[in-house]
Amino acid sequence: MARSVRGASAAAAGRGVRFPSAPSDYRFLLPTLPSGDSMEECVFLHGDLEKRPYRLEDFRAPLEEVGLIKAIIGIGAFQVNHIWLAKMRNKDDKEALLKTGGLRVKGGFCAIIDPIQHDVTVKIHWVDFAVSNESVRQALGEFGEVLEVSNDNWTVAGFEHAISTTRVVRLKLKEGVVLEDLPHLLRLEGAPSFLWPRVGHRFA
Image (cartoon, rainbow, N blue to C red; front, side, top):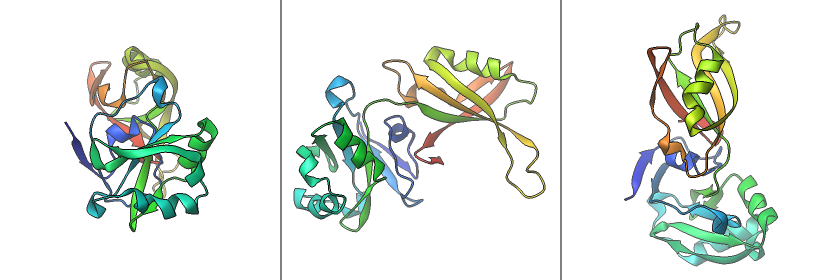
């Protein structure tokens, strides 16, 4: 079943989407996408829903512009018309396409989704100042390896010296675990906390 999320999408985040240039109102509509070893050299191209339908020739100019059209050895629509699966010649070419941050297709933004799971970053809100970082590590340990826990400082003028009730956590998810599997509500030392994912360079 496809899932629709306005703005940044948690489902996309769990698959390594990089889209710092995406419009703030960009919408994702994602079916269940495959992952695993067979996807090592593949990416999904997620077109702007408002620009449907898409044809192969719509991708020619954008891929030529970034100099990677010859690096694609296979491409086609996947499950729905606005999602296209592209197979690259090698991992270096795949990384080069991901580093573009997205394409401009039919005048709309086209996000690039890496189906191979990478490290993810989440924010946990409403965390009591007395809660230790170790407690946060333990709470998320069943989902993967917690690589880093840090306090989120305020950027509001006059309060830059103060920490907020938010912790930023970077973790490497276990095999078979995706970002959607993380609970939105955690209990840290008896109190509820709210977990929110990072998408590209933004938090949803």
